[in-house]
Amino acid sequence: MAGGIGSRFWPMSTPEQPKQFIDIIGCGRTMIQQTFDRFCGVIDIDHVWVVTSKNYKRFVIEQLAGINTQHILLEPCMRNTAPCIAYVSWKIQQEDSEALVVVAPSDHLVLNVNEFQNNIKKGFDFISQGDSILTLGMQPTRPDIGYGYIEEGLPVGLEGNGIYQVASFREKPDLKTAIGYLQRGGFTWNSGMFMWRVTTIISELRQYVPRIASVMDEIQPTMFTPEEQEKVNDLFPTCEKISIDYAVMEKTKKSYVLPAEFGWSDLGTWGSLYALTPHDDTNNAVIGNLVKLIDCEGNMVKVPSDKKVVVQGLENCIITEHNDVLLICQLNDEQRIKEWNN
Image 1 (cartoon, rainbow, N blue to C red):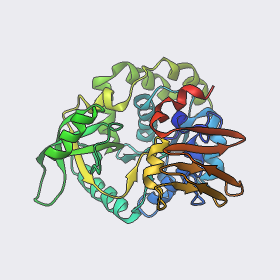
Image 2: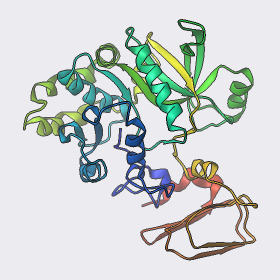
Image 3: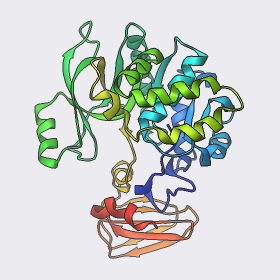
Image 4: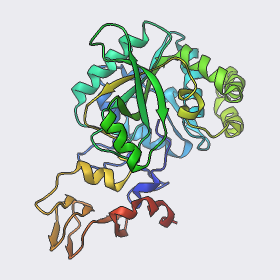
């Protein structure tokens, strides 16, 4: 899924070129390229699909060499993840009705790729055996209020399988509740990564969001024809704007969770980047080759590698420059950034 605009990562992420098409951590690969890379060896390139905005098709083609262009689906507008997943599911089913599917956001960070791939393989083994929906649940490392949580139910299958029934999905909690989850145990972060048979998710979408399903049924006869995009442009905007969590995951009786640890972050905010970037002796995190900090503590600095920056006397701030836009603000005010970028 590669259609978001990453508004909380402004000014680096903009509607013209959002964060999934940018090298945020300075590793030489954009976020969508890193997502693609970690599936290599698990999924053949011919089986990779990307759902994105019509405005970002060129980025996908430029950054994912060799991808089948018929597998790049273009949304005319943002309608959240349920219509996005419905569109690609109806089209995948038309190409392969027995397909096993893993859904992954294109802008997440994974540090331990081998462990990630091991969990994906375990997930495929599980969903291939039945009519199940599997979520990858991330083991929480702190009482974070920015993530939804999954409560584990009874274990499934053989001892040591590591997969549990889902007892409940919990919305983003307040800090007291999040602390309670960690103290009680048996809770994971909802990563937004899902695995299922394509027939399973289509059946669940038909049951719980029939209006979206009817839109996809109307689009389906044009799929893989020259008329498809025009039909999508006309009908996709009529879909309800709803996440897959609200549409299906919180209602289905088929949900399971695989708790996992592979150095994951959704990199949704500057604070999440700060948490993952190495810190100096005064807790500053710096991405940039020519940055000098004087009497500074606890800052997140991200500037182009050729940009010389000197900062004195700041604490707990975001300091970033991108395309001649400079942002300096308090880290604890980062949720307000999307209000400032217009």
